[in-house]
Image (cartoon, rainbow, N blue to C red):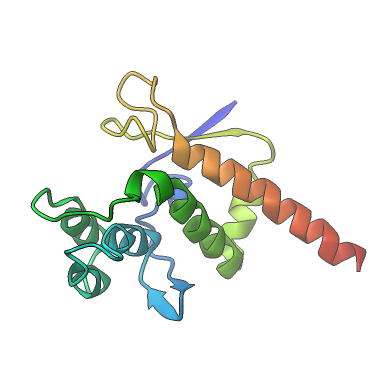
Length: 155
C-alpha cells in the first residue's frame, strides 16, 4: 500500500510542508516548514534581506512564491544542502507536534509519496516517476522517531 499526500486539507495533509505547524529553528519560530525552507535559500547570499520577508509571509504559499522568485540569487551551495535542510525541518516539525507525530507513526512501514503533479524532485510528478525526496524524508523521520521512542521506553 502507498499513502499519497499533497494538499493540507486532504488526508495526511499534515505531511505537507504547507501544513500550519510551526517549528523553532536557530532560535526563530517559523510559521511552517515551507517558510523556513524557502528562507534558507538566501542564507549568505546577495539576497539575504529576503529572509525576514519570507519569515513574515502571511501564508506558506506566499513564502514559497517569494523563495521561488527567479530574480533573486540563492546561496551558492543550495543544491548541496537543500535536502539536509528539509530533513532537519521535517524532523523538528514531527518532534514538536505530538498529534501529527502519532499520525506519521500510524503509517507503519507504508510507502509515503508526495503526490505533487509538478514537482519531480520532492514529489512524484504527474506521471509518478519523480524522485519523491519529501516522502523519503518522512519515512526516514518516521524511523528515527520510532528508534527515539524505543530508547525512551527502555530507560
